[in-house]
Image 1 (cartoon, rainbow, N blue to C red):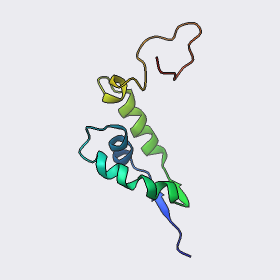
Image 2: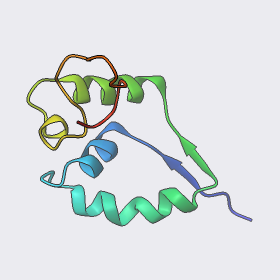
Image 3: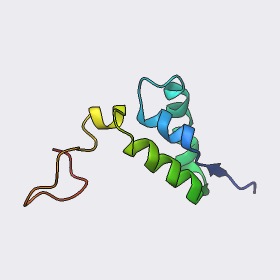
Length: 82
């Protein structure tokens, strides 16, 4: 049986997260392939690139409310949507 592997790359993840990205439609079309893959490969370099892109100011990921730029207040957990 042929093994199904999927390499998760920065461009793919960012296109998947950003509906305005040129390749967003294609990234969504590839999502079932990733879900059905026996293995999904990811490198530390890709994780760092994704984190840097998400941490950059003015990114659409922040504007859509996925992450909050407000300082952490009492009773609010890190990473929660506000």
